[in-house]
Image 1 (tube, helix red, strand yellow):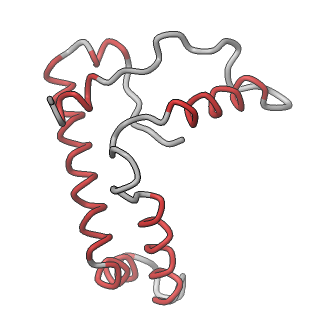
Image 2 (cartoon, helix red, strand yellow):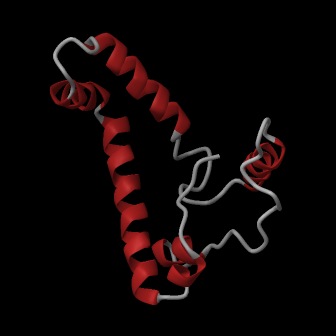
Image 3 (tube, helix red, strand yellow):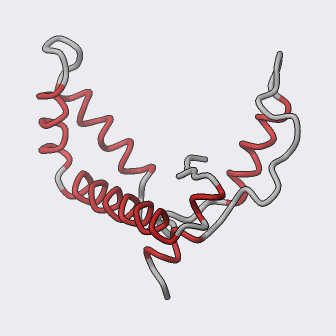
Length: 120
């Protein structure tokens, strides 16, 4: 599970929700561009990395792997997968030696941002 996290008070502020929605829409557009142009995206990443840190073939494979994870046809981009969320909360509640959470968060999810991105 990976998601966009915001404080509850920010989700009650329409201007903040607009900013979050713009970020989410921009992220989607960026990932779509990476999916459409994997080699160009890999070359751009290579240009930003230290000279000897990775080779182009490895970076292209990484771009393809990310494209598989962000497959837009498989789910509605920006929506939280409830099963993945529940797994993450369980791990945080039961992690040893010190759990990341003491109690399951109540009211921790919201669709306020995604409704602003796609108001249908």
